[in-house]
Image (cartoon, rainbow, N blue to C red; front, side, top):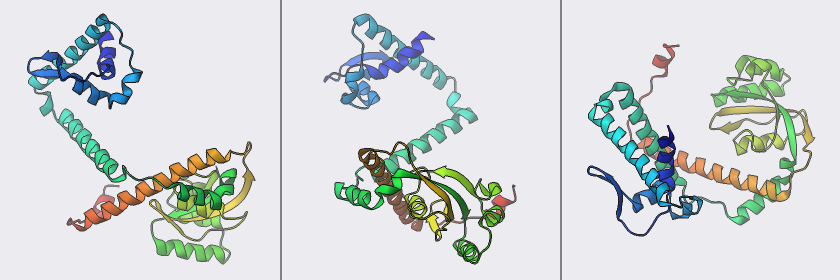
Length: 271
């Protein structure tokens, strides 16, 4: 199986400026430009290590082996095999989805002022952890009703067991100890870490649903994270939030331009 390793190495050959053919199988050719594309750009040339003509020959031979296998698969009709066809289609859809989303978010970046302002307000919330309970439901009216019952004295854990759709429902909504960034939603974290021990949040909306959060207790992190580390985390979180908002905004625009019909009751019948 040694040649398989060289199939990978073909992605790591130094790129040159010319478009000369360096290998061919029938009418399929391999050029330096092809290799540059494969390795993701000339900036990755520094990571290469092929130093001799013998090394280069082995790598090119590995590409040849890969190409003749692909040709054999095509001529043997494997593309029409249902499982292969489905796998190709799934790969095509995934590539298109990733390319589409990458195109939307490619230029999004918070300014240094935005990072500094967020750090000034929320810095201390990155220095502690919180033990919390949590209720998540799909309906905002239900969430508001549950919050009213909690504020009137109903037991949070009991309501979580009865109504929450999250995996922690059986434990009364107990999520254990969390820190900033762990939930994946800035709005969730902000609501959580502005609460004191024993306090309950208002209804918090995220892409996952509508949440009610109760802080059981808090403690300071040890060792305390450095400010530079916190700023790096804040930057990543702001970028992620900007990207998610941009993608969802684009999806909402796209959905308006399509006739969409949903039958959740038909899906439910299969469960």
